[in-house]
Image (cartoon, rainbow, N blue to C red; front, side, top):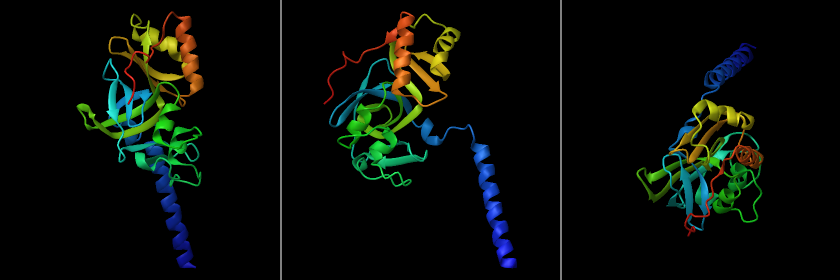
Length: 225
C-alpha cells in the first residue's frame, strides 16, 4: 500500500512540475523560432532556392544540402519536427500522423514528396528561419531552414511613406501582433496571432491594393537552378 501511495505521489509531483514548467514557458518563443534570420521563399530549383531575407533588399541564392536541417510544427500534433533535407519523404517520427516529413510540416499534400515541393506549396511570404553554413555567405549553403507560420516576410511596394502607427492600423485585419517595413520600405515583416495561410496572403494582397500598394513580384529574379 505504501509503495502504491508513494508512486501516486511521485506521479502527481511530476505532473505538477510539468504543468508549472509549461506555464512558465507560455508565451515565450521556442529557440527554433528565433534561429538565424527571417526569410521567405522566392523561387525554388532542383538544388537551389532564392530567398527573401529580412536583412537584404535583394534575394539571395543558396543551396539546399542533403544534411540541411529542415523542420516546423507538425500539423497533426503541434510539436516541432526537425529532419534532414534528404529525409523529406520519410514518415514523421514525432507522432502518429503517419505523414512524410515534408507533408507533416509543409501542411500540404504532395505528388512528389521532397523539400522542393514542400517549399513551392507554402503560402506566399511564409516565414522561414534561415541559417547559412557561413553566416556571412549564403553561397555556403543552408545549415537550417525552419518553417514558422507565425511570421511572414514579403516584398512590397507603395508602403514606404507610412509611419509605424499607420502600418499597424492598416494591417490589423490580417491579425498581426506587430509589423515593420525593412530595407527602405521594400520588405514587410509581420508577426502573427494565428498561422499564416494562403487565405491571409490573399487578404493582404487585396488590402494593399485597396490602399494603392501591392505585393512585390519575383518575376525579375534570376531563374533558379
